[in-house]
Image (cartoon, rainbow over all chains, first blue to last red; front, side, top):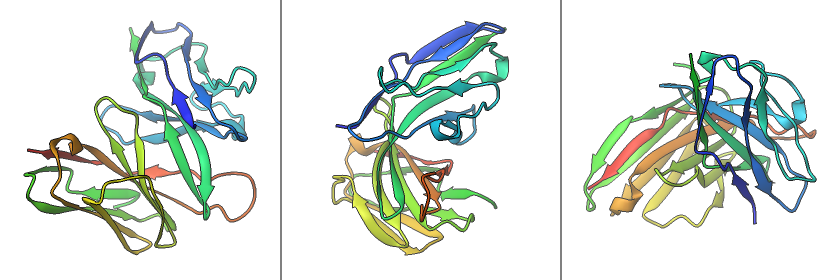
Length: 112
Length: 117
């Protein structure tokens, strides 16, 4: 079964502290993983994908196939990082359209 | 307006009503999706359309009926819903992946908050 687990519903850290949002997945094939973010009063949008191996807004995420994890990290949190973060797995493709499986989401709050 | 739009933004309906949710994308995409976001569940994929053809129905009850008249518009027709169908319904669009390994990003609308009384 395809499943994405985000064990923390809420995460609160102080500004300047490191942040790690956890994501674990279950998938029998070769996974493709994403982090989506939803800022207050904005729509859900892509933050980063593992294939790109990029850093966006200071965030990085490394796919660890051995631990089936795709944790999102940032060394120094900023107040504008406060948002809802969703980990998602591309659980297959059908006629070129991707089927995303989402985790429950983690609400990140950065305290001043 | 650019991106993906959804109307109405809020909808309250009785169990015997019939209503429709509308989604429009202005991105030139050729795949569209309906998702359901309930309070205590992850975002769930409901339907997938590829080139206006429904290619996935994720075990959704027949009281939800999607329609994709063209690549820019997607509807979700609702009838005889139950209170447990109250949720945020999100529409998304993407470009189909035609070659290469890179799967294309899905762009989401703001959602319709549905309340069934």
